[in-house]
Amino acid sequence: MAAYDCGDSTRQQIADRYNVSLGMVKKLVQQRRLTGDIAARHRFSGAKPKITAAHQRQLNRLVAEQPDMTLEELRDAVGVSCTPQAIHYALGRMGLSLKKRFFRDLRERIRHQ
Image (tube, rainbow, N blue to C red):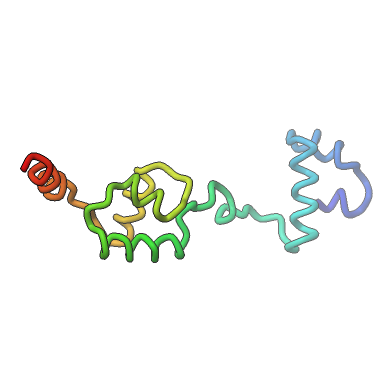
């Protein structure tokens, strides 16, 4: 970045010198302008969680009120666009679990009466 700051080299020349893309040099220049640093920002990378704290509160309430809901039903009730596995993992992080076998068997017995 010192070469860029001195005006000795263009962005393209810096990219060629360090064998990186021009886009990477532009990104670092912009990052330094915004944050004052060009250090890696790993905590900001990757996919953002789809299940927010508000969704977790809704899941907690729904599981308490209707423990026989399926993962798909919970997902639809919360209104989040994710896989059933994501709901399962979220429930696990919240210390909740859904034991469906008991409720599935109960529903089958009620249906066959």
